[in-house]
Amino acid sequence: MQYMLILNETAADFADRSDPARADDYWAGWNAFIGAMSAAGIVVNGDGLLPPETATTVRIRDGEQIVEDGPFADSKEQLAGYFVIEVDDLDAALAWAAQAPSAVTASVEIRPVMPPPNAA
Amino acid sequence: MSAAVAAVERAARDAYGRLVAILASRFGDIAGAEDALSDALLAALQRWPEQGIPANPVGWLVTAARNYAIDRYRRDGRAAGYAEDLRMLEQEVTGKSQEFPDERLKLLFVCAHPAIDAGVRTPLMLQAVLGLDAARIARAFLVAPATMSQRLVRAKTKIRAAGIAFAVPDPERLAERLPPVLETIYSAFGLAWEDFWVGATPADDLSAEAIFLARLLVDLLPGEPETEGLLALMLFCEARRPARRDAAGRFVPLADQNVSLWSKALIEAGDALLIAASRHARFGRFQCEAAIQSAHSQRAFGRAVPTGAIVGLYNLLVDRAPSFGASIGRVAALLDDGQAEAAASALARLPSERLRTHQPYWAAHAAVMRALGNHEAARASAEQAIGLSDDPAVRDHLIARFHLTDTRA
Image (cartoon, rainbow over all chains, first blue to last red; front, side, top):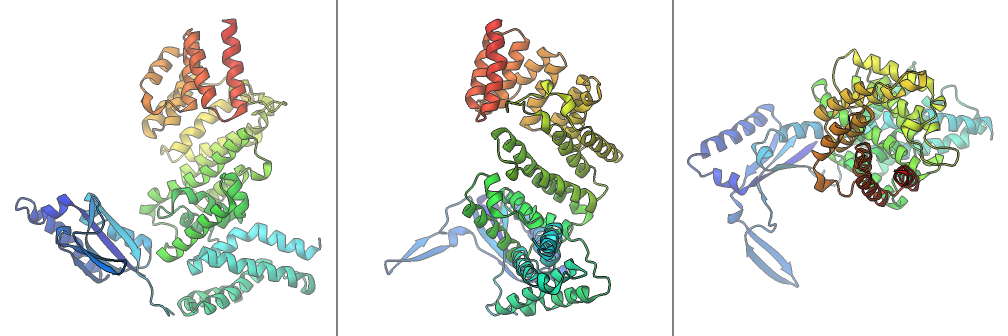
């Protein structure tokens, strides 16, 4: 089965990315996690994302396009990246998700990828 | 009722959980398994009276259910995804032995998987493993039948969609996955206990189902001390059932119960389980609680209750598996052991702001105050406890115990 690991981070995590005192540890943690998944051959695809302040949100309301600065949801945790992995079952996906650095500081949501409409 | 119809009913009752588990573990789909099985049971009701009862009723039902499952998955365009599972099932069905592995253990772990909302784990287990209908489960959980059905459907959909594996967890994961299974079973029993106070009908009493599930777990996963502890705990409680209310239906506290009404056979069965569990020398909450109940049960054999030992067990419980109930139980144990001052200071150390609406706290407080000779405070606390109790039998008991004594004091 394919699962998306939806990697959330806190504002402090995002700040660590460019903090000279902490960036090395931050990236080392992610590189180790991504390296382990790659070595296991389970990664279908995935990306890190730039911080939420680079986000732009668009909505259509009453036929009018509303564009706003920032992410739609105002919450303590923000989307920081994602991976789609191919593993046997939820427990296997959980075991990988639990190794993500952001599982410690924020959270990882695990969602099954929707199968194609005529999945045989 | 014809012999054939009786045979269908017997097969359904004896083998329901086994059949659902066999089918669901192949398809990763509880709802699909239940649908296929009910189609198969309907077919049996039509055909067995005409064609005779098959030599292997369970094998017949699995074959029929498998065929209905194939039809259903074909209709949904999902058959190819299950081709391998169906082929394996076919081999098992047509194989000589006609014996199926017992997959109910996998089903128990799926129902109590941490990815399933804790509130629906017990209902799910009652339905999938025991075949209880949603209406009866809804009555026991005090929700509308439609609400319960909806929750069960949602949970089953989640299991299939999220790809929760029908598997017994690896040994290294078992330690974290077994406790939710035990909690789920105990919650059915706890509910039965509460039902008892509010006078639910026997048909809604889930204690027998909980005991069945615990026994199943002991059989299928032997050598787990906490599993044995849980079953022992429930057997000790069950042993006292006939003594918990008097002839007028009034609540009878443990100390006042007529021990000749207790079931010695159940107490002995509980003790045997506890001894087996103790060989593992591994502390566990359920073993500890069972040991406390075993100590109370000594009265059935004309022996004094070892109150000091009970205090020791509660100390262990509060230390290793802290809970509010354990703390209150420890206060009561100290009182029984004649340590009223220690009971008062243990009670005073509890976080009071969280306890203002907690009936057992006030009942314990009243008992402690009375033991210390502070009858005014005892009466005030008893009134708090009475005001917080939903159960008329418990209210009557508190009124009798405190008001009458206090008037005499």
